[in-house]
Length: 263
Image (cartoon, rainbow, N blue to C red; front, side, top):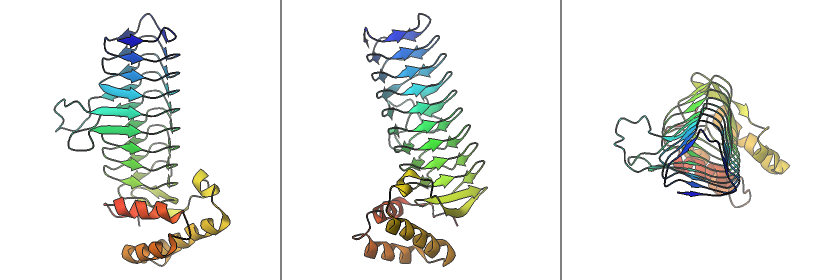
């Protein structure tokens, strides 16, 4: 066990031998930190939380009260293999969050990047990969193997089906059920979710110049108004990629998309 003398751990909390607690970490009352857990400098763990398994947490993360991180996943094939959870830096994770470890049938890990904001009651299932700067609203859940690319936004009380892919800057509106992949910068909503326009509120979208923003709108028109076949869209992307960096987001999305896109 390695506990920095600069950390603060409530007397009622249990830190098992084999855990690593960095400097300036704060662990509230009645928490359990299991052997194999690493918590990076400056992170805060709220009261009554459990961090379990082979879980590695970066710097300056915040976990709300009653959170359960790194717990056994819900895949019936899981047989207590030494799979992991890896969480980056500066993530804000609300109360009652659940983040499950991976499976050997998947990636063997659940990965969360940097600067994400998950509100209360969020569930991240096994083998999910969450990028950077994403937002997930209250009581929303990602089933196993879901991928959220950078700056994807999920509203409150949403359900994302297993193996779905949400592209960079995509937005899912409140109380939606997503069963297919959502391309970059597409707003989708409903049960089952359908495309509703371009997400101009995305920070990635706003950082682009006017020409690339117009191109995103044009691609949306081609896919959803002209109903072009995906293979035709891919050919268009190949022609445009050298001139417009944003096209790379679409290329990477379609290279991984396996469930078909929302229509």
